[in-house]
Amino acid sequence: MSKISHIADAGQSIWLDYIDRHLLRSGELQQMITEDGIRGVTSNPAIFEKAIRTDKEYASALQHLDGGTAAEAFEHIAIADICAAADVLQPLYQQSLRRDGYVSLEVSPKLAHDAVATVKQARRLWQAVNRENLMIKVPATVEGMQAITQLISEGINVNATLLFSRAMYERTAEAFLLGLEKRLHGGADVSGVASVASFFISRIDTAVDTLLETKLAQTSNKEEQTLLHGLLGKVAIANAKLAYVHYKQVFSSARWQALAEHGAQSQRLLWASTGTKNPAYADTLYIEELIGADTVNTAPPATLAAFRKHGEVRASLDEDVEGAMLLLNQLQAAGIALDDTTDQLLDDGVLLFAQAYDKLLAAIQEHGFS
Image (cartoon, rainbow, N blue to C red; front, side):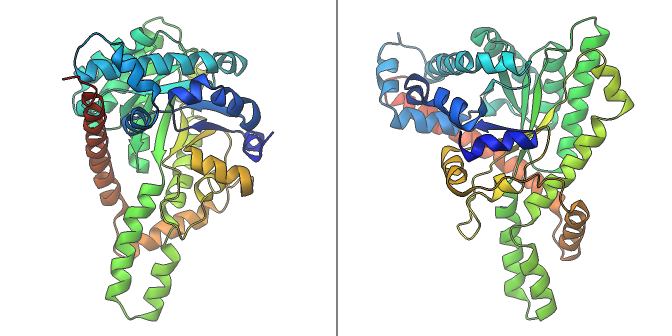
């Protein structure tokens, strides 16, 4: 067993943020489950675009399709991959009593601001995949919150994605609770409905560090420079720690207990965007500093490979929560409004995912699809 597998000892599940046909057909995913303790898989348009451009099996698969649009062709091959991954993960889904063993498939990011269309596509994908260990990814926009509540009420598992702020997470948790309550009041079973809240990490540090570097270039005050330097690369982890505090509050409340008595399972925080983008920071930073009970970390292959070599496991998420609050207060005192930054990151994230979707369709169009 690798170092990665020991993260489970701290109560955290590690999911793989990648999918392609080689991973599925070579047995590599099963090997990662066995040796690394991988407990789930996530995907997005950028991941599929990379897979289609680099894995030759997709060219053959596309050649065997009978026409149609690029969007239809993508959906066909994505559903096949997601079904295959879900089948590999099915034993883990059963063994974990439906807590892990999920694979995520995203609705079109073009629908991020259309709740009705998001729900409609999510239902169709849910039925097409027809696997109980599927999660449908829905962006955490205002309209996405409406969709999340509706989908949860229908018993469709949801991966709420593109969360950057604690306020976004609070709204997502509320949408999840409302969906479960609606389902329970309708007389349906809530015990089999699963959800995670994908809270993005590295993009926050990238955005905030840029603002800090600008301020550093504008001041010659040594005390201010020391303060600003001390914030570099620290904000995303502090933000996540305080989101985790809210998670524990929500899922220990009387409101939650009323649902838990009927078998409901909590909506775990899932740390996403955990590959380190700044080469000055440790390549395992966003795994090592975010290990906590009842959470998930979805990481790309390169980050997992780095942790396999030199990662260290400790229950870090509960460490120095007061320090995390102080750090964010210092950020505000320095004139950087984190909420404004995270709101922009959500808008940027929706746009980037939509652009990735366009690039994905362009890759498929190269194989003769319209």
